[in-house]
Length: 301
Image: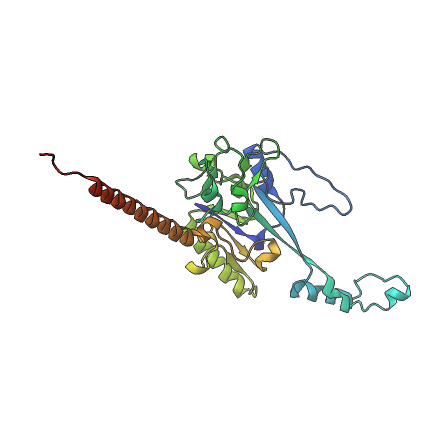
């Protein structure tokens, strides 16, 4: 089971954040409003925020927005500039390229196939469930924090109060009762879709094709449908449809579990060490046998 998050229809309402916090009894992150303060109060994923809607401002506007702005200025709908020398020298039509646009992305744990957090956990607090999701058991976590740097997406975080790690469980308790995760249930635009992973990939691929036919050539899937050598962390259980480069959303272009990246060299080193240890043992037994033969005495008749 997994998530497909279609950022092209996300409106940034944060209903998923609220539903996640309510269902999982997670504390609020505070709220401040005023000049210079974003509506994005949470800021990022954390031990107390398992769903987070990123607010991404695009300083390069889309062609449609630029065309609308230029048309509005041509029709005299651009307002009036103060009659001062500095402003008088400004070419308003030239300044339309500075108009920005916004995209939103509801971020969540990827539930990776090669999950770095699971590879690094020494206590078994992180497990892979029968749904092929990755769940963190808070009551087994000892707060060591190894999972935090092991996640290539910066998802896992430690609670500042008790030190234990926390992240999305894909609402494992709801799945056990046949319910969909709280975030998907609350999404008003179906930006977040939940279901069998293979079915979601088919739905997402059709959505990408639809957007391409509508002229949105930049639409693509992040974390699904890649060739084996190009997969992110072996394939993501929670993947995304994006219309901008991944770095615009604060996402890495390439990612894998640090343990999985080093698994071949580590395995070779372990095998080599095992062979050397075995050879040393054989030589030790051989030397002992030779010494035994050299000191053996014949029968005293």
